[in-house]
Image 1 (cartoon, rainbow over the protein chains, first blue to last red):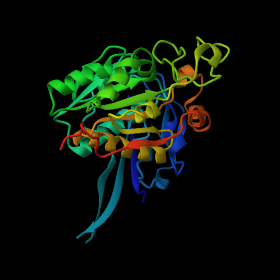
Image 2 (cartoon, each protein chain N blue to C red):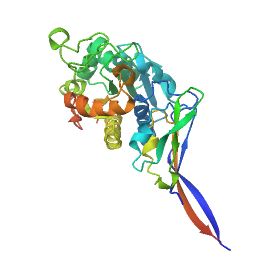
Image 3 (cartoon, rainbow over the protein chains, first blue to last red):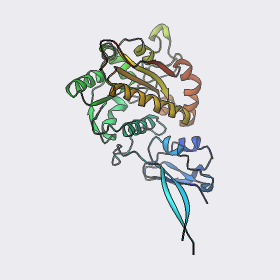
Image 4 (spheres, helix red, strand yellow):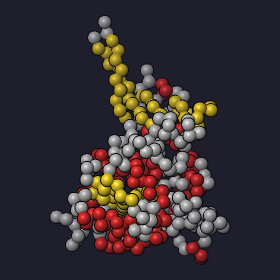
Length: 77
Length: 261
C-alpha cells in the first residue's frame, strides 16, 4: 500500500515542473497532453506507490496547488 | 472479523491564512508563491494572525494584498517602509510586515529603507531579490548581477556605467537599529527550511520589540531571465549565491536605547 496520497489542484497548477524536480522519490512526471483550462501542461503522479508522504512537493509548489496526505492502515474488529 | 481502515493524516495543505479564492497570479516557476506560503506558515505557527498587518508594494508584490487572509495594505512603489512605520506607530500592538521588491527597496525606496533601519523601526521587511524589475519587463535593477543581460543592459551590466550590485542584507546589518538581518534562498527544500527558520526569527525579534528585522530572499524570475524554472534553480545556485552569499549577518537580542524591556 502507498504511504502517501498526493492531490494536485488542476485549476491552480501552472505546469512549472518544480514538483517534478524536487520529488526525492521521482513519483511525479509531466503528463502527455493533459492540460488544464488555462492551457498549462499538468504533472501526474506516475508512481503513487513510491510516495512516502514527505510533503516536499506541496511545500515547494509556488501555486499551493498540491496537498499531501499520509495514509495509515489500522485494523479494527 | 477484522476490517482494514485507512486514515488520512494531513502533511501539507494550503495554509488557512491564504485566501483560497484568489489564485497566485505570478508567472509559472516564480518563487514568490513559495515565499508567500512560508509567510503564512510562520504567522500561523506564531499565532499572530489576528494582529498582523501586511503591506504589499509596487510591482509583483502589489498582488500580495489579495493573497492573504490578513489585514493587508497596498503601498506605492518605493516608500513601503515609511508606510509600514506609520502603521506600526499608530497600532503599536500589531505585527507589521512589508514585502519589498529589489527595484523598489534598492532604487526608489533606498532612502526610506535607510531611514527605517537607522530609526530601528520594529517592523519585519521581506526583501525579494530577483535581480531585475520583474513586472515592467526585466529592466536592470540595483541587484542585477555584473555582466547580466537585461532589456536596459543589452551588452551585460557594466560597472563603469551602471555601478555595482546592491547588497541589502549586509547594508541593513551595518546599521545600529537592525536586530536581525539575513539572506536566504528557496531554491532547494533544505534552503527553504533554513529560510523559514530565519523568517520566524525575524518575526520573533519584532514580537519581542528588539528592532528592525529584514530577511532577503533570492528569488527566480524565469520570464525575465529567459530561463526555464529548472535552469533558474541552477542560475541561483551557481551565479546568484556567488554574488549574494547566504547566511545571517546580524542577530542581536538587545539594542541599547531602542529595545523594549
